[in-house]
Amino acid sequence: MCKNNSACYKKLQFAECSVMELKKTYPVSWVVMQNTIQECFKSMSIDEKRLLILASPIARTIDATEKDAITITSESFAKECGIKTNSAYSQMEEASKNLLRRYFSYGDNKKKTYCNWVIRAIYENGSISICFPEEVLLMLKEFDKLNPYTKYKKDIVLSLKKDYSFDLYHLAKKYQAMGQFEMSLEHIKTELGLPKSYDKLCNLKDRVIKPSLDEITANTDIELTYENVKQGRSVVGFKFIVREKPKPKLLAPKRDIKTVDLFCNMSDAQINKYSTILSKLSELSDLSNFPDYPTFAIWISGILRDPKSVREETAKRILKALHQKTDFKP
Image (cartoon, rainbow, N blue to C red; front, side):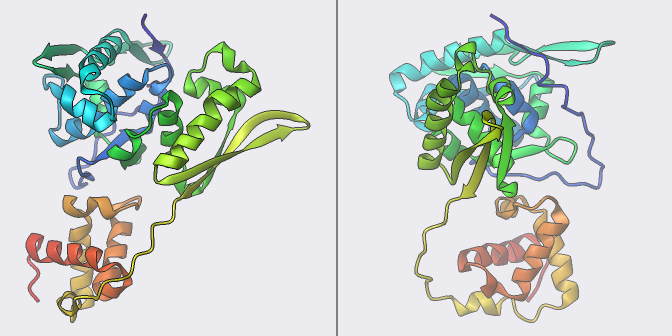
């Protein structure tokens, strides 16, 4: 049966970047999706979500168009998702057929467009090749201020096994910088596409919220907890608290003095020039959690001035890029 996610696409904006603006790039180990796509996740099966997550880095790496098939093998699907190989192909096939039948709409009262999630699926030699329409590819490839997005590591999100853990993890990563977010009960049910059986608060907590948050906290890079939001004595929603897990403390290895020396004696003009160049390199994009290139460049300039301010591994990566990807001469 077709699912009409009529609201999911209304925020999608076809933003054209200026010629001078360089797009951010991310390693294939990262999933990057417009936040709009999360609104469409509701009612999708876990395997449908897995296909979209696995397609995300491929689509942006090859700059896919409607004519380009994105191929996922049953072996890679099984390995990435932690499932049995002998059931992976049938799970992929069922998920892709559901995506072929599934559609969403966007527009207004004067003009409305309906679009399928997948326009073509080819099954061959234990693999599935999927062609997406431009509307879906846009959500998998275009990331800027007009198309807000969320990013996270692919292996982390694919470690989740519960249907609603995917959705809540995406929301938590979306609001991680704020440390918390609130949702009314109605908003939660709408956002997750929950059936009527979860109208009872005890069912919602015991079958959706608690198991999902426990799984997220146990298997990902964040701790996600919740508190009741009340009006009088009635629970009307939840406040979710997002905390990044502390990284394990390691004994700092002895620093290579050569790494520091090669940064030394850069003038302010050189630091400003090369930090700007380095901030736009795809090789360093995974170091950025900043909203734009200038802010990332400021962070890099601090390292060029004082390489001891970060881990030696990070300083060496910036040093390597400085020498191999720019015209800098020490």
